[in-house]
Image 1 (cartoon, rainbow, N blue to C red):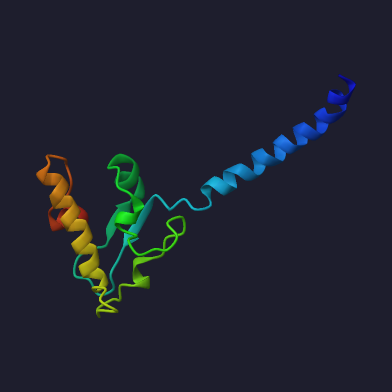
Image 2: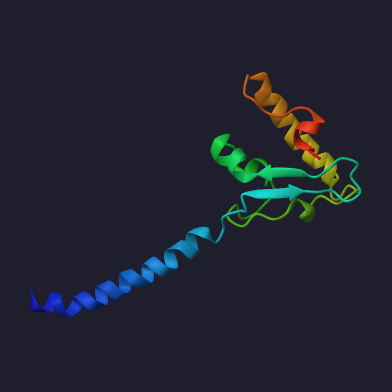
Length: 126
């Protein structure tokens, strides 16, 4: 019993340190909830993209969009592979990549009766 009383301050201190460090570790690789997808020179307004809507609410896996990332816990930006206007190593230009992934998915889920934006102005809002 005496030994436990002597260890107690050390145990409390260790738990305190764990509590301080844990939130930083779990939030370290968490993506921002909302991104603004903007292509330079685009005719339509940028698109506000919500990670929460797509991953938690729609159940999409990150690898659907981050399909070439070597480490799924540290995804890269689309611009790493997709150039603004030119094809690079078979990767379509950025706008075509966005439209290909996003429109195909939205049309697919809409065909199943799930609500998803399918018109240009549904995503490109002024």
